[in-house]
Every structure is written in C-alpha cells, then in structure tokens.
Image 1 (cartoon, rainbow, N blue to C red):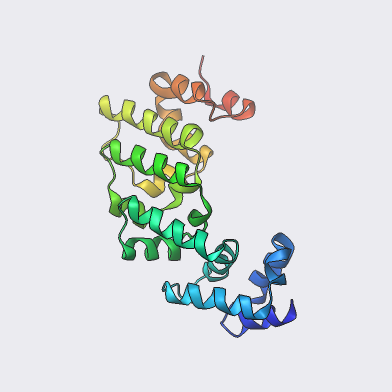
Image 2: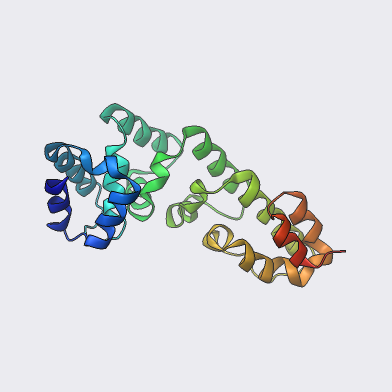
Length: 204
C-alpha cells in the first residue's frame, strides 16, 4: 500500500484524498505498484489533469475494469454518439459515469435528448445525470418543470446541472413550494419525497 500512496503523492494528490480512499476503497490501494502505474498512465492518456480532485477517482475507476471491459465501455460511449473528445471530457469531469451500466447510460441519454431541452453538448458539460435515478430523480423533476413551463410559471428552462445536482430541499423551495397547487401532487406521486419531506410541502 505504501508504494501506491507514494505514487499518488508524487503526482500531487493530497494525503486527505488518499486517506479517504484508504477508508472507503481499501482494496484499491492494494494493487501492485506496477499495475497502479499502468492505471495512472491510462488516466494521463485520457487527459485528466493530475491537479484535479477527480484524478484519484479516475484511476480507481480504471483499476476496477479489465482492459477489454474498459475498451468496450469506451466503444459503447462512442456508439451512443459521443466523440472521443466528448468521452475524454466526461471522464475528466465525472469519471464515475464510466462505472454505470450500458443500459442506464442509454436510457438516460435517450430520455434527455427526447425532451428537446438538452443536446449532446449539454450532457458532456454535465454528465451527472448518468449517476442519478432516471425514475426517481430526473423524470419527476422534468415533469414538474414541464407543467410550470406550460403554464408560463418559469421564464427560463433550468440547466442540466440544476436539474440533477440541486438537492430535493432546494428543488422543493424553488420549483414546488411556490406552485404546490399546480405541481405538488405530481412531485409526491413520483415517490421522490420521503414522509418527512412530504409533510413540509403543505399540500392539502
């Protein structure tokens, strides 16, 4: 483990991040130093900046797959319509999406494009939707926003990052509470809220 810690330290990864990975992903740092250097090299080749906080996460994601599975994942992203540059950008921003199943990648990408609100470039800039629940997070929020838009209650459609990164409490505060008569029941019906949050909406 110590040689691997030194590999990351020599590449600018802080001890706080390394320690966090020791606790959360202990097996990750048990790879042989030679293998770890290969994983690091692969991440370097994809253009992920070593100073990025995502660097060690990117190396861990690469280490979790066999070479053939990694190549298949890259090919699948390409088949979904992402260019090599798109793929590298998403990997640098959110390497965790490369651990997502092919089925989910396809479903999320198709749903977002079918809404007509986002395009490939939107997804490349904000890959987080691939990590969210399509049924419990993305669809209910899009439905709420669709209702608000149809009634001219929102002036501008929110960005993809707003849709997916915003917490339930913030989404409620901005898009549900002020229009509870119009969308409150819709939001609840999709089982997005637990019982405690439901009592706070004030829907009768």
